[in-house]
Length: 120
Image (cartoon, rainbow, N blue to C red):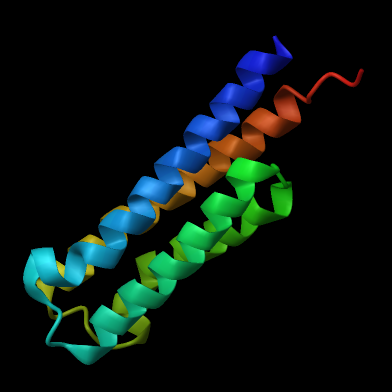
C-alpha cells in the first residue's frame, strides 16, 4: 500500500513538472512573450515550480507542496495584481495553470496526510 501512495505522490510531482513546462513555454505558444510582465511572471513561476517538482521527485517533503500551492495561488491572482488581466490569453493561461498547480499540490498534501508512508 505504501508503495502505491508514494507512486501517487510521484505522479502529482510529474504533473507539476509538466505544468511548469507548459507555463514556461506558454508566452511563446499562447502569444504573450512580447509583453514583459506576464511573460516574466510565467517564466519565473515556471522555474520555481519546476525546481520544486524535481526536488519532490527525489525526496517528498510536504513544505514543497505548500510552496507549490502558494505559487499556484499567485498565478491565479497575478493577472490582477500585476495589471495584465486585460490580456485574455495571458490571464487565462495563468489562472488555469495556477488552478491546476493548486489542485495537484493540494492532492499531494491530502494524500500524504491520509496515507502516511509505512516505516520499516
